[in-house]
Length: 314
Ligand code: NCD
Image (tube, rainbow, N blue to C red; front, top):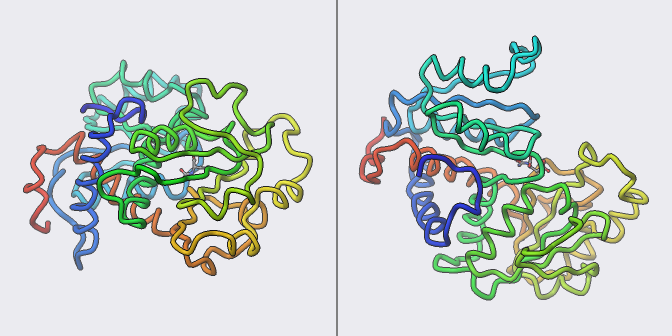
């Protein structure tokens, strides 16, 4: 595997293998000195053309735990502001010696395009509305550990609620969850669903309350106001009343059910309760697992391939 661009490129077996490797990385992360020499001498450059808190720091932490060198390219203070093209930026940084670019871009397909301009590995850290594969992998890992489902997600009932239309997380998660065998229902107002769901392995519902007691996982999405150019919602208050997670709704969930959110959260909109008060919330666990999953991804793309080489502390 040279690049990680889309969940579409991975089979169920590939996903399982990545989650197995993540177990090793989680073990490294739990050590008093959470660092191994596996990627010593490799250079990982993050190139974020869109804002990010967790994804960027998560990749950075992951690369450092594997002893890679890291470079953060700050678009806001770069020659991109002087009109430098994406291609020239990539070719320039590549000339300094880069093993992997971690790329976030507002245009769908940008990471795929970049593979043509460099020999480095490309990891898609979110492209437009299209894909966010490491988010899907960390979500699978969180469900796998949270519900003790090591072998498959067969029979699991997962609802993804909210702004599906603009969500690369939803597109990636639907593919990954379905590949592992889960039954996925999308819950959203019609204006926040994609115009066509042809080929999506999902059911659709507009009635969250009816679904709640049967769910194993309630996955909430952020209402992505920065991506909406039309008035797709009458008001945020109405959205919250119909689709937000309130105390009353949380009480209708099964005791074992997990509540997930990729972050950042709009408190009071898609989530009206403090996640710290929800016994099933694994939202911070998702963040913790994100580092281990990204270690597994970087090791798969850049490492020697043998898990034994990640054993000893750096
Ligand atoms: C998501 C993203 O940027 O796609 N955030 C993340 O990476 N954790 C989701 C979002 O912005 O709503």
